[in-house]
Each structure stands twice: as C-alpha cells, then as structure tokens.
Length: 564
Image (cartoon, rainbow, N blue to C red; front, top):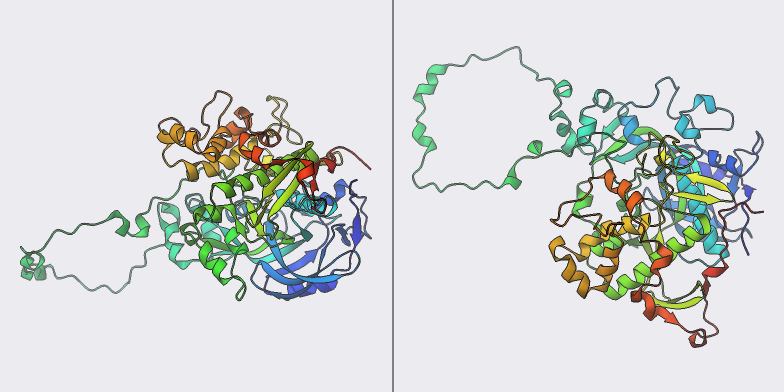
C-alpha cells in the first residue's frame, strides 16, 4: 500500500482570474514551481500547466473572509465539488529583510521576475533554487496530505494546491528588526517608495541612533529675536509651592522614543525563529465575521499588539492553499485552556506525528514551536492507533493536533533530498548542520538530528510549567508532564540546555539551535512513546470494538528511498 506522485494538467485560468480580481492583492499567478523538476520531465508544453495529484484542488472562489481565509469550492478527482474554508499561506520566495536592505543583486531586472523553465538566467538565484524554503514547505504539505488520504493519518494537513504569484502590499513583520533596518541607508532611501511602514506611530523610531538617516531639522528663515531682558521679570516663585507633593515618575511613562531597541547584528545569525513564512498566525486566525468573532477576541495578546508591519509594493510569493485550523497550542497555553490530562493527549499526538514523519520521510522540522502546532475540533472522543505492534486508545478532549510550517524542514522522498535553503551557507540557519546539499568537506559532518524537534518544542513549553529554574527539581518530582518536557532538554552531559542553574540562558539566540543539533540525543520521538506517562493509553486488541476505525501506522511504508 502506497501512493504515487504524478501530475495533473489543470485549466486554472478562470481560478487565477478570480484570485487576481479578489482583495488578495495577487497578480501574475502561475502553476510552475522549480521543485517539480526533481520528479518530472518538463518541457515547453507542460511546465506551466501542471499541479500535483492531491485529492482536493482549489476550484473556485466564492468570497474572501479575510486576506488569508477564503470561502471557496474544492473539487476531487471524481469532479465532486464541495464548499469549505481555505487558508492561503503567503510564503515569501525571497528573504524580505534582505530586500528591505538592498542585499539582492540590482543587476537583475526585477525581483518580480517569477521563474519559468527557460528564464533561469534572468531570475534571482534563490527563486530557481529547488530547495527554496517556500518550495520545501509547500511540497511537504502535499506529502502530509497524501498520508491523510491514503493512510488515514488524520494528523496530516489537507492541501489544495500551490501557485507562484506576485503580491502587492506584501506584509512583513519588522518588530524584531528595528535596529538592523535603522542602520540601512537603502531602507531609509526607499521607505515610502518601494515599501511603507504600516503603523505611523512607529515611523519616528527609525530616526533614533542613526546619525546619517535622521530627518533634517527645518529652520524657518524668518526668526523672531529673543528679548532676554524679559527673563528678569519672571517670578520664579511661580514654579515652587511648599504644599506641592513630590511627583513619582514611573519608567513606564517614559516616551517610546527613549525605548532601548532590540539589537540586530546580523540577519543571518541572530534570529532563532524561522523567517520561512511571513504569514502571521494572527492573520490566520483573523475574524471570519459571523462565524469566528469570539475566537479572534480571545486570541489577541500583548504580543499581537506589538506587531509592526512593513508593506512591500510587489513581492514574489508562493500561495499555499490548505485546510483552515482553529488555533494554536500557544493560544491554549496563553489562555490557560489546557490541563495535564489534555497535555498528555496533546504530547502523544505530537510524538506520533513526528514519529511517522521521521519513519516515512527521514523528516526533521527544525523549527517546531508552539505556534507551529495547531488543532482542529473533533467529535471523536478517542483516537485508536496501532504503532510498532501496540494498540493505543487516546482521548482527544475535542482536539486533533497538526504540525504546520515546514519552511526549515529537511526530508527525503523517492530518493530525492529536500533541504531548506535556510541551511545554505548564507541562510538564516547556516551551520546548524553540515550535510548535503550544503556539505562543507572542511568541517565535520553533522546530519539532521532526530532529537532536535522535541527539544526545540520543549524550549517553548518549559517555562509554562517551571516559572523559577531554582524550583525545577521540586516541580518535576510532582508533575509528570513537566518531568517529560524537562527530559527533552537534557544534553549529553545531563545539563539543561535552555537554562543554567542560576536561571540565565545557557546559549544565546541561534547558538541554542546549534547546540541542540550537536548535544541533544535523548528526545527521539519514537522512543518517547514508551514513556511511563503514556502507558495508560495501551489497550488490548480484544478490548477494541470491531467497528472502531484504527489508524494503523505500521502500514505506512518508508517513502524516503527510491520507489516506483
């Protein structure tokens, strides 16, 4: 039992017109994606007329509920049409930060030249790279969807197709990049020309600490002379009053222009968080008017309020169309909507997902945090898995979890290696690993680490259970969930890779990623299923009703190697 990868010729002209005429700010839509050349022989007659063979395809647009969420029709291979909500992820084909600072070669005609089969010499190299993080993201979404429909792997993301396009008013969150952008002359010269700050309140921040780029002070040519004799007539007693009480000034009252801005030394090495996708999770959860008003109200956080967006006039993207999920694990944590029983179910589902993806595709996500784990509602009270010869009955508590955003992923399919160009020597995750296609023979080989993802996730969850590092020992003795999370943080020397004993961070920023890759080896997902905390889920085959649908994960083959 398996599935085959092949392409279908679809006539998308009408769909493209609908998308371009909507409020999504899209133009120049096309089917061709360079990664397809890994698997198909393309020529002039077919290269821009094909889509992959996923079960459902985006067929027509009814209306757009927001910039990211469509009310649309999807069509299956039998031409059955149904209505559903579709989430459109706008995955950047170039690094927005590099564009804002003028790092792309100006000899190219335009950043808006999308790749074709025959114009590679006219495109910015990243656009034609088969390992472009956007292409890697979109293709694994397809693979995940195939597991959903061919193997009943209900944690797979349903995928409705991908297209390349140019987006007007592409939004990029610059809240973490103030200092770096403020030192760029190119950014200042082209603000309000090629791109715009979407929040006028923050425009003056870019005048701080940048001597070369401060706005010129305009001095009026007609000045009134100052008569200093008048100063003698001022009664300075007006400014004093014996009854006045001292005024206490709180630092929070200090104006924003005296704020210490975040340090931004190098865009390629200073950010722990993946830049592979610029679709904010808050956009994904944007209110759908009648249906989801309460969801949007509840999901607003202080972090959302701090977002500052830069609008880029024209920007190349991949539109990845997939199922709309309800919300994130981060949302549940922020709002204290998850208890220990629900945590156990959630972590088991995450471990199952990673185990299957690793077994099937030699997969590592490489940026798994609590906003990259989403859920959809389910009326199934239990999930029945069969994995490695054992039956598990897992309560859902009304939630099916799914992993999203594969822009930093490394995986294999049919003998082909897909490795995000985030790991390119000039990428934002360079030096995390040392393997093909970016292997440096002058340095020790370092393959993708199967323990990386659970450790990276634990870094996001640990503080939820342990507020004071000095109390770690007492907490993990009382709380089995906290103990499990803590175990994923222990390096080969038995040290907490996130914090030192005094509570200071052990490794700053991207150094943490590098050290996880090198020194964490006890968080392999498949091995975690045998943890004592999950033993209560084990059931005998005899106890399962014959009508119960069992998710037989042992039937899913290894698809990473070459196969027909």
